[in-house]
Length: 526
Image 1 (cartoon, rainbow, N blue to C red):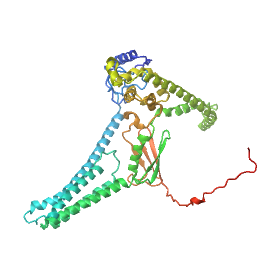
Image 2: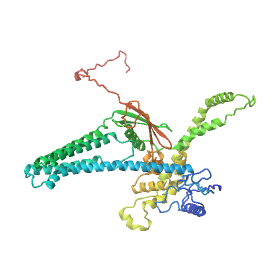
Image 3: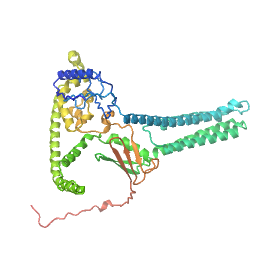
Image 4: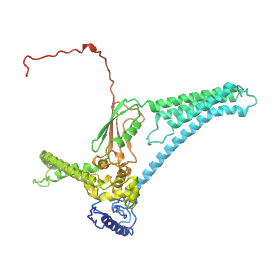
């Protein structure tokens, strides 16, 4: 393994970016002769693979450059590490990848199987009334009684009812699924079974009483088809009540706590199953919770490790002494050291807040000065100086170097640098310039950490969540139920509480009873 080389660089103009590009190009030409590496940067026991910086200029005109090849420490360092191993993937990684593929194939099969069953059943439902009307005309047309005015009016009724049923079914059932749930949706499965039994019973009655006997009363046959369509409309109304309206009334309050940093939110839910409540929690998590930043959790761990590293235990009685004495001595020393550790924590937090405020002030000033160099041209001004005009992307590239160093130092101080690549900052800056936004609007994304959805999807999105519950996931929510949603880095602990029954009483106050008397003391100040 060759040694890593850190190259100090600053944002002093386009000359810096060209030098950075040449270094990255020379490094990339050397790495092309190396053996291939895995795409996800995985590591085995014998090798470490880290992606090198991109070879393009950092402020090039290509807006579609790959962000994953970019260093988080853009602006100060460029690190290149080469390896010597021919294989950069382990057997554990191969097993994990194959397991993920098998799980994805199983989920896809389950999803498409349910969709296929629902589509076939829906097609059967819509073709059944039409078949009831057409089969007598095809099989014993000459024996049928003539269809009068009432019978022809029933044709129009069937047509419009089927159209309404088709639109309602499309709006309620044929929607893009938002997630793959571990179990089937009970109410939807019951509705499908009910529809199947209902249509089957109608076909059974139609075959015995109409097809076998070749009934000649055609108006009665059409009326039978109309009754089927009416019953299907009532079933559709029942589906709306069970699938949509039943869960609207708030019945439970859930507390969602992130296990790593303790951030919590409260939500009100209706009558839902545990798996559907978990889906609602995840949808709200991506919208309401701040992005998970593991760098903010390393400070306390580093502080605890530093305190424990300063403790030393000496065995003066020889190696044969019991180890319990050392444990008691370690615990006692840690307790004495803990008595003074709160002072260190206080001064560390105060110093960190001072540095954050200092970096923030420098960043605000740098951005405001950079925005003063941009002016939107009016229609008549665009015809006067065509050579000096720039599009929003070029304007963003022109003013970015003057604020880049202050922004990078602030992001490093607040430990947000891994969520903001240089390309994403340029795109946001170009967006603000295009929409004539102020420097304060540009800085809002970086000064106030926003919700998870605000950041790049590849940096926070977890492909698979695991639902852990002592109760069956298809059972409804109850008071005191606790379930956990786990992903790779953290978990969400959900505690369910039922909203209590509230009893209100009424008390009438007569408006004429609002009479007051001014009370004066005997001795008052003049």
